[in-house]
Length: 198
Image 1: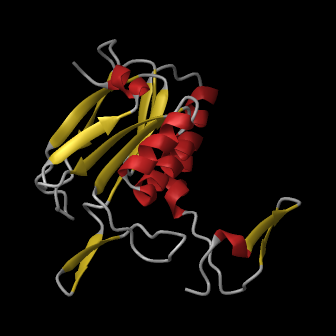
Image 2 (image 1 turned 90 degrees about the vertical axis):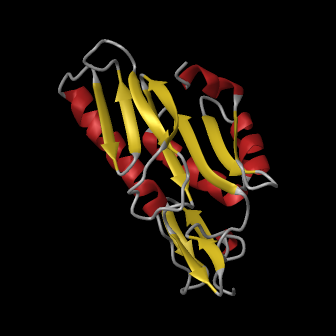
């Protein structure tokens, strides 16, 4: 993959310089999160104290729902269902004054020669990621950061993603993966526990 690698791109004086003209940058992994943040800023500017914004699964919550309790948002069980017709919840979160997003490989994938390939591309290899992490939910101060880190977690895989998130400030993650027997398992950072509905 001669045109893959962050080393082929530099940021100089706020300008992106490509060492290889065939290198392409794709910011789509941040777009919906940024959009949710921009709508939240508009709400804040207009004095809205309680809201929940959802743009394609990238969510920003402030204050409480109309019942006066934290917003309750479900994380889907990662079932191979591109149409999301039979959605089942893995867990429910209580969220106030935070942003979160979930990235996964269970809706956008394809089969080639009987093997399943996720839509997430490893930027080091230029190839689809192959590991047992099915879903990564990240809570962060803003949605663009949550969006970027959730995608990063899907590239890294379970162990590296968990270690990565543990090093971050004000960022927590909830990971769904399959074990050796093919059963769903979850693991999350210590700080994520406060968001789980009891």
